[in-house]
Amino acid sequence: MRRREGQASVLLVAALAAVLVGVVVLGSAARGVAREAAAQRAADLAALAGARAMHVATPRLFEPPEIDGVANPRHLDRAAFLVLAREAAVGVAQANGADGAAVRFPDGDSFAPMRIRVGVRAVVEVRRNDARRRTAVAVVAEAEVAPTLLDPAAGGGYDGPLAYRQGKPMRPDVAQAFDRMERAARADGVTLLITSAYRSDAEQAELFRRRPDPRWVAPPGRSLHRLATELDLGPQAAYGWLAANAGRFHFTQRYAWEPWHYGFTLNARSTERTGGDGATRGSLPPFVPERYAPVLARAAQRWNVSAALLAAQIYAESNFNPFARSPAGAQGIAQFMPGTARAMGLTNPFDAVAAIDAQAHLMRDLLRRFASVPLALAAYNAGPGAVAGCMCVPPYPETRGYVARILALLHGAGEPATGAGLTVRLVR
Image (cartoon, rainbow, N blue to C red; front, side):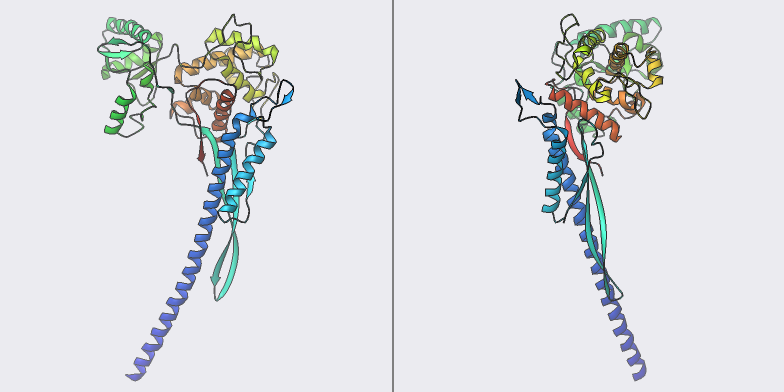
């Protein structure tokens, strides 16, 4: 019995020792995990700080280098812009315990970089077999200046006169177009009923409170219904007729998953187009070369699109180089892919005058379809299918950067709001 009790004591002591070793190992591992988490936090905060510095400084990229022959202290060249972002990121990384930070700019070659990547290394100490081992762990964070989520009616939505059809409010031109469509449907034996039209932000907020699902009810301030151009139509038996005929009356189905939602595409919100006879600079930004000012003004007037918007696109696409070629195969001053050029009737993408006219035509069509400058820009870059699938700026780094750069350029050129602002977000 005493031998068995002695054996039990030995086993108990061994078990306790094993537990203590396990506690030490687990404690060491926990400390390692904590150090890695702290490094990741430092990298995240550093990336966000760098992106915020870029956001704040972006308008200075578009300040003129000189004013009346005197250096403009507000102007920043790209190198100084990147230095500001790098210093902000490194400073925040160090303030959060990192020994240092490696900073890179994935789109640093663009005229207005919008992404920053921060790497932080942490030394993690792990104890194994009574030996302590130090291991370096690298963590990475990436942040961007990106367009905000769709706000197609920035500035308070529609505030003009309203007309009523079936007791529902809408823009007067929308009402007249609906009258024509309703008469045609009735002639074909189809009844059209309006279930919803213009909605204020307060009405949208109540709808969202009842069903807070953004796929089915847009949050307040983001619904196209606040533009007074949108109609929810029924009954279900009319969906087929609408799909086949609504386009004849300038209505388009906004969302693939909502067969009842049709928006009026004429007079879509954009920015102010140039005035005059189209042969002068009008409201064109100063970065537009003189030889392209009348071309842009004429195209803007012809297609009812902002000349400043077209100019900012070209700046981002080719920097006004009519012979530009991209690695992806885009060609000319407006960087048309061959298939898109053919679809727009553009036989020679390197003909700057014809390409700018085709660009304005395409942007007019995209603005009508998506009722939003940021979404139209995203569709120009990534294709309309990618935008229509989510009615958002797709989460492609190139597309987000493209839209953000143009919005920043428009803001720097003094353009009014274009339907969305810029925000800073962590993407990695």
